[in-house]
Image (cartoon, rainbow, N blue to C red; front, top):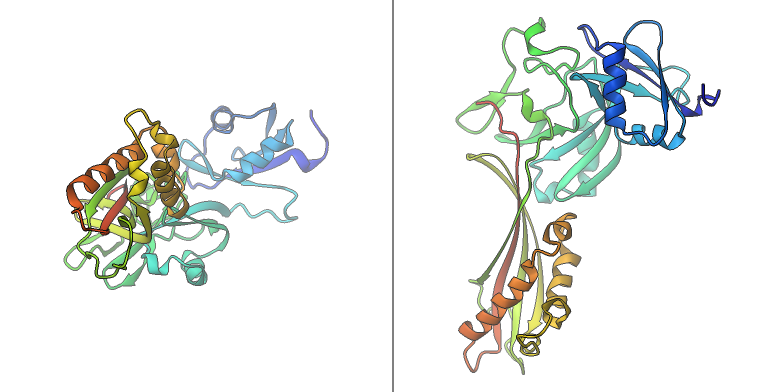
Length: 350
């Protein structure tokens, strides 16, 4: 045995109406999921669906608690720290919830209390990344999962759950699956749009995001120079930087949020480069890179660009634009640079 204190221990219990996974299945699955840095002892406590986990390394215990929830064969294992309370309630579990489709104007700190009340439970560790709110929520498993809420008659904001195991597609309960549901006879429905309906519960409640796609689009702006200063002594670009965060559930449903930033870019920055210049050290490259990275709402933009050369290609496009679009007397050209981040979501059942 390890340390006799409970500081290295966690307890877990399956929440299910069906036969829970066996001890052997549970231990094997959790060792694979947890990827521990040290050893662990697993013991059954009383009935077959309650377990005691004792870790050699306390950091393993902390990492498990930071990455809840966990499932074995699709059945949720509610994990608790025995030091957190004298009364352990295995009908309440910590779930990670993403809020998808919330308009940009509501993605504010002021709207957080409303979101918390709509999600239910005690929301903690709230983050806002890439246009999505994310919550750690204490969910009452005796109640159906919350699927989302309407902000307009036909505009539905979805809740998506990270690492969500099996649940009932008819009633939304997490303790059984659709084939063994005796609560309702038919699937619960909601309005999908003005003309059609969809099921409330289905696999789309899982955060099954596909690989994200980024796209850069540079065009001459239709706004022209009306909003810009014209009394300039040297040629400049005025670049409207537009970040579009697009979530697509199916060809007929698209949720889009947008943020913008504007900056000036002297054309002379492009004249200092030669064919032998390392574009990553040029002033043009550095200015454009900094304007994009310092103002983007996308935390994974730099990771996606990496060494792919998108910004270098953008500098080359600006050179061509200067050559082809600027007349000899022009001092100002307005461009629109769109950075589109598209995420495909699990489509709802029709």
